[in-house]
Each structure stands twice: as C-alpha cells, then as structure tokens.
Length: 293
Image 1: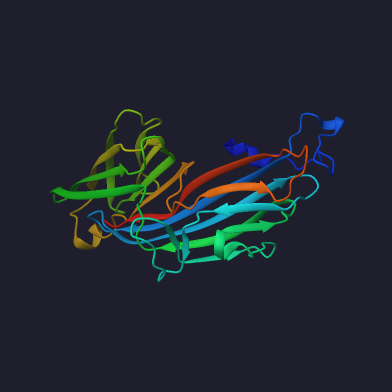
Image 2 (image 1 turned 30 degrees about the vertical axis):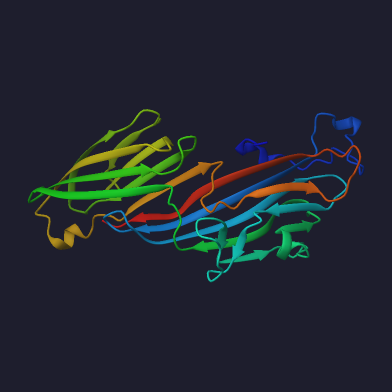
C-alpha cells in the first residue's frame, strides 16, 4: 500500500491494546507502520550534459504506531552488494558503497538473507543509511546553450530531458539560472510537451536570475526554456562567467534511483489477530543537482 505524504504526520495514539486489538475508545484508529526509502541526489553535469560526478545518499526511515512493540523483520534485495570492489554480475544487482545500521538492528541474518530484525522504537527513527557513488541513471539530464547574438545580447536555452519511466513524474520542479549583475532586462518562454502542468518561467530582477518552475514534469518527456537577455554593456569573458551554474530542485514520488527495494516487512512472530497496516513509500529528492554553463 502507498500512503499520502501527509500520513506520516499522524499523531502517535495508543489505539490498540498489547495484543494488537483495537480498543473500544478509538475504533477509528489503525495499527500502522510507515516505511520511507528516501534518496537524495547530488549530481554535477558539464555544460554539454555529461555527468562529472554523482552520489546518492539514502536512508530507510520508519514511523511506528504498533502496539505491544512486536519484533519486525525487514528484507532488502537479495543481490545487494556492499563495497565498490564487490563483483556482481554485470547489469544486475544493487551495489552500495557503504551502509550503516541503527543500534537496535539485529544483523544475524544479514550476510545470508539481507534480512534485518529489530524492535522498533516509538515514533520516527532511521533503520539504516547508505551511500552510492559512481554511475547511475540520472532522472533528469540538463543541456544548456548560450549564444551571443549581439555584443550586449544573449540567448540562453535550457533543455531538460526526464529519463524516468513515463509512469513517474518530477514534482515541484524548479530550475534557476543566475545571470550577470549587468542584466537590464530578460524575457523567457517555455516549450512544454503535453502532460506538464503548472509551468512558469520568469526573470527575477531583484535576484538577477531566471526561474523556471513546473508542478509536474512527466517521465519520458522533454521541456525547454529559452531566454533573451540584454546587458548594460558588452558581454566580456568575466561577465560571461557570471552566468550559471544552473541549479535544479525536484522530488520524484514512488521512485528510487538505486533500485534498493524492500522485499517484505513482517511481524517476526505469528500473533493471532495482529494485523497492522504497512505503508512503504519511495521518494527521490535533489540535494545538489547542478549543471555548469
């Protein structure tokens, strides 16, 4: 099951007794546990769209509203490898550089079955952190270009390609392009493909930057912003260096780049009548998503 983003803010209420059965006072409350696989991406692109460096900082965090504090078992990809020098068959398996576990986690089944067991503390806690560097498929590719059409006039184009599957989308996307301090006026327009919503591009004169926003950026689509910029004087090489870098912010619900997956989350022992709701969500966010100009 998937939960709405607001669901994690639910108050912790003792809605079930120690056997996991609903108390009569709060029959509308549920016995629930939320699991979030959150990945933050740091990517640097060159001005021709190549990835110069890339890192995923990920964590699995939980919020537990389980009565009786039962032991849980959490299983991840069986082919998960740890360490850059680990050899996995080409094209398969997930390799993370390193992984750190919460002190409450029992690792006795980790080496053989990639399974963790633990008694979840009340409220929100991080089960594990992981880090992955090197090559992975970036969800968005950025292709910028700058053309000097007159000594004091520039045309800037930013082309962004969503390389996530078409059943996913980037949410609350913003793309910023810093401009020279000598900018006097700038106008911009957007070429959007169908499916993109809440699209807007403007020149923020107080901050000397172009700001392009999209509420929804569908996977497998391309969007382009073009801007005409007028400077108060000629564009010298020093002024040219004031343009950029491009900075992109986004969130991708129910998607992760590393392919780390929760295979299952179970109550460790069989407890008759104990049927908690389990919600698993994947979220990918930009941490530092930058393209040089």
